[in-house]
Image 1: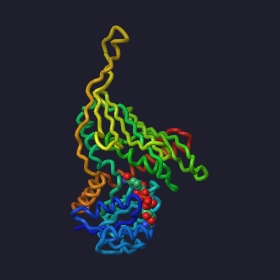
Image 2 (image 1 turned 45 degrees about the vertical axis):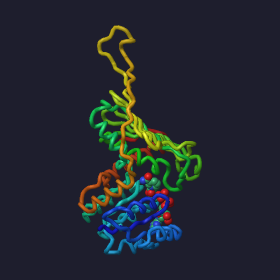
Image 3 (image 1 turned 90 degrees about the vertical axis):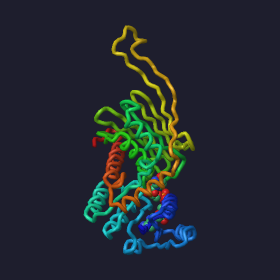
Image 4 (image 1 turned 30 degrees about the horizontal axis):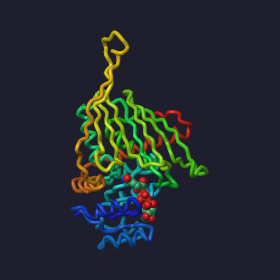
Length: 336
Ligand SMILES: NC(=O)c1ccc[n+]([C@@H]2O[C@H](COP(=O)([O-])OP(=O)(O)OC[C@H]3O[C@@H](n4cnc5c(N)ncnc54)[C@H](O)[C@@H]3O)[C@@H](O)[C@H]2O)c1
């Protein structure tokens, strides 16, 4: 039985708490949160869980094996470093941290203390993303040309990290996972409208370019009329559209493409459009967060490397930092 300590049980942390409290193989012993309301809710919902306001109670408890961090990102580094130094495994919500040097230090600390460091890149545990990955890897879509994603909503407006750092970790982790490649350059433009004096961008459009010519564009915003969670993958043989806001039928595979003839007489023969069937694969509808939490427990038990470990977290962090640099530089590409 793995004993868990949680820190941060706010808007997102309460979902992690619900999952860990109901998983086999672990028990949530302590929840730490600065908010009285959050602490009393946690104790009321989960009798047997102790709620505290001092993180040292969690870090110094020899019975706690692993700590789950779901506080606001600017606090992640200190809490995760303290956890690793006290000899416990750690799960940190995305974004891992806000500075590359802090990410590098956490990876070093995990290595030195032989501890598990996992980042909450939930999308790489999403059954529909796993299904799409299988389809891409099987070659069904052909050569992947480009990918674009939109993650839009009205809210939640944050006051420290911008929409890029809040939302794009999801889509960046998806792109790295699906393409199994890292970009060579990142371009980004964005604007702050709601908190101009603080320069916190509400919306951004970033593009990653890959060595072999692939391209991935990510549009994120918390200032948009509609909730959109869409990803389109365009391949040489077929195309895929994943709509995560749809309750069912999240994935569609379009047998559409353009054939380029090598031997042709007229312009009409040079390019021919192909529109075939649209297939909606049946995909398991289990909760991605549950799969992610189960994966963490399994890694802690088996001492294995998480799919979204510190190294993956650092890759995403480097791309975010490059996008931020490009955005602050008027959209000039940043080389990685
Ligand atoms: N994976 C996802 O889909 C997803 C979705 C939303 C948020 N998140 C991530 O989850 C994290 C938390 O976001 P949120 O929306 O729940 O924020 P939130 O502000 O609602 O909750 C944060 C909680 O942490 C507590 N807290 C802050 N600092 C603390 C400290 N030093 N010690 C103890 N408690 C502390 C606060 O009191 C609050 O209850 C962020 O990293 C965010 O990016 C992930």
